[in-house]
Length: 297
Ligand code: G1P
Image 1 (cartoon, rainbow, N blue to C red):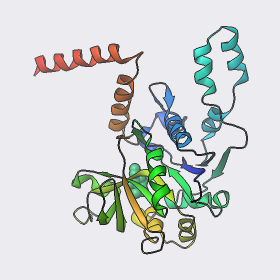
Image 2 (image 1 turned 90 degrees about the vertical axis):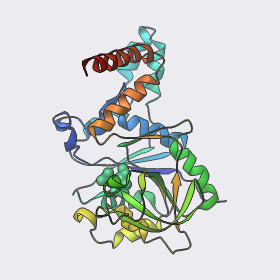
Image 3 (image 1 turned 120 degrees about the vertical axis):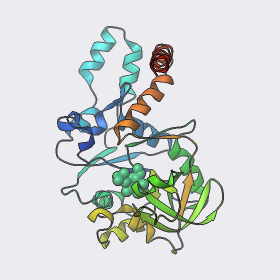
């Protein structure tokens, strides 16, 4: 029986400058899609996949994130007194059990690989998950759960993967595919943010990883790569050819790049339309403005 994967790292140290001025005083991960902070989507996905320990790699100014995960007895009491049971349930679903969350500071913005490496002592010698909360994935079966099920058969290292338009490939980690088995590919190379025109394929890495602890050892000695940063992609690439190997997993679901304004807006609309309490109003509004635009053209 393979080791169960129970620990997840959430790199949340980024400054979120693309969302200034909002991120001047709130962490990007607290920004809401409809009524849930970005980070809550990541936590829910991790829980659905069986994760029990949540490690946040933070930086200065991320205090609101820690507060968000605290229990709020006063608020809960108020809601209880007022008989607002549905809100109380929603609030309770965000509570985390004592001792299941850890925060680790990344003292210097040296890249994603460095952020993950900062959590090495909390991971120890176990396989672990990395979730990038900017990548929000809407799926019938949560993406990470799909991956954990696939990983139980393969072991090794697994990254979420998705075809992107070739001209966009240079914004991602990109896979060089050895064998394409449909939902799974075995990987013979990985490049972080390849120069336009040099990408080995248009199969991009999306922010869900299940990794062997060897990746942390690789990070011990890795040099800075693309953009002068310590890249997680490079440390994973060093696993190619080991008996663990690297696999890409084409998940079923729709990914939103919530690190970009346009992706964030698209996710807001999509999640709004998926909600019973908002669908009709939002739908009418959107059809109305689309029709008005057609008339104006
Ligand atoms: C990070 C990873 C990259 C991956 C991407 C997915 O890049 O370094 O390999 O393809 O996330 O969103 P970033 O978007 O942080 O530049």
